[in-house]
Image (tube, rainbow, N blue to C red; front, side, top):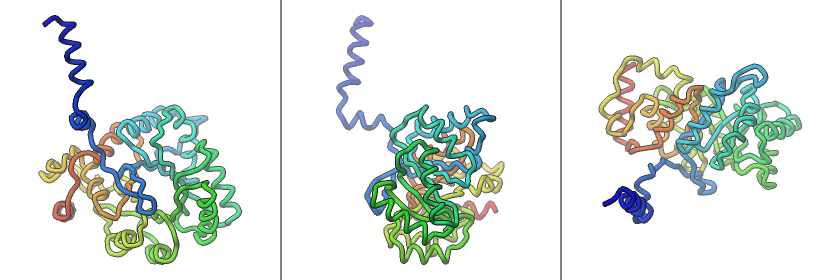
Length: 302
C-alpha cells in the first residue's frame, strides 16, 4: 500500500469509528448534580482568594492567565470569587474574555452589612466580571444574611442570578448555618471540609443532602497546610488504585466523593498545580470503604 493510500485508510478508520469507540477516546470527567435544578457541573472548580488578587496596573497577569487556560482545558467550570478578594474579580474580568470558554460557571458573593449597599456591590461585581448576570451569588460569611437573601430571592425571580446561597469558612458558625439550611430556600452553601477538618460530616453535609442543597467546599487543602502533613511521604497504594498521581488529587477525591459535595474550589497560582487538581476529575472515585481507608492513612501520618 502506498503512503497516500495508507493515510487515507487511517483517516477513514478514525472518522467512521462507531460512537461507542469514539466516546472512549475522551476522558470522562466526574460531574455532580445541583439538587435544585438537576444541572451537572464538574466536581472540581477553582477559587481566587489571594491567587488572583493582583493589581492589573502593576502586576504581570500571565501566570493567572495560564492557570485559567489549564483550568478550562481540563474541563473546569465553577470559578469562585468575592469582593473580599481585592482585585480578583477585576482580574477575572480582564482575563476571561481572552479564553471565552462557555463552560464558565460564575460564582461570587455579597459582603457588606447594608442591604442597599449590597445591591450596589453585587452590581459592581457583575460589571467587574463583565457578565450581565451570575450563575451563583452567595452571602459571604453570613454577613447580614437575612437582608441579602431577601434581595437575592428577588434577583433570582428576575433572572439576574440562577442560584443563591450562603457561605462560611474556617469551620465557623456552623450552628447558624444549620438554622439557615433548615429554614431558608437556598440552592447552595459553601463551607470548609477536608481530610484534616471533617466536622461538617456530622450534621451539615447530611443536612444538605436531606434538604436538596448543593455544597461547595472551600479550603480543601487548608490553604496549603495539609500538604505539610504529608511532606516527603510517598503516595499510598490506595492512591494508585484511584489513579491519583499526586497528593492534591488524593485530597480532592476524598472531598468530592462525599455524596453531599457538589464542587471543591482549591486555589492556585501555578498552572502545573491546576493540572494536578483537575486530575481528580478523572479515574475512579473512592467508595465508602476506600474513604475510610483514606482517613486512616491520613490520620496515621499526623
